Amino acid sequence: MDRHSFTRRGFMVAGGAAATSALAACNNGINSSGGAVIDQRVDATESFLFNTYPQTRDLAAKAAGILYMPLITKAGFGVGGSYGRGALRINGSTVDYYSAATATFGVQFGVQQYAHALFFMTEPALRSFRTSAGWTLGADAEYAVKDFGGNLSADIMTATSPVIALVFGQAGLIIGATLAGTKYTRIIP
Image (cartoon, rainbow, N blue to C red):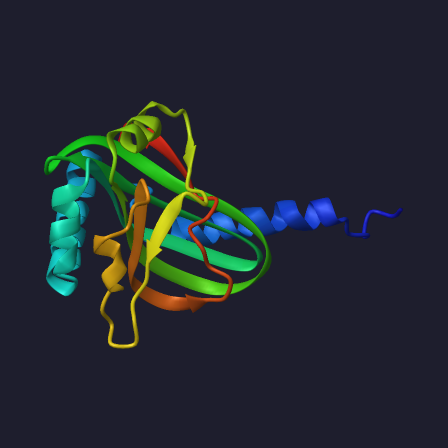
């Protein structure tokens, strides 16, 4: 094998580095000045969510805690990733800060920015999230989706899942985007 041949591993490493560089170039809080900036973004995100989808106020009142991720930037060109930072709120107060990161491989092309919120509907689900060294969103989450009129599905108010995930405020387009596999890690901003 000569020095000009490409390996799949080399391609994946180069693609991952390129995706990380692209994400770092986006203003998603990577170099923010700390908790105050994250809290301001979370306040704006919460306000947008409650004003755009009023039924989420009732959902929030039932939740044991809510993780707000104000801005996630996702980029993919075969190999991709996403990154963002946010805050966990319990009874309306920030208790911890978290990063959300995903590494992806496969059919995906484009760049997208979006916000999401995880509503922890039970104390055990919230406790599992907070005590985990790195919690990954999996199949046990219920996803609330927008209908054709832009409203959230009515069944979110009767959902029995321990975690309800809402994705909103999308800008840009990426094919193959999902929250599944997103890893959340507690950070000190």
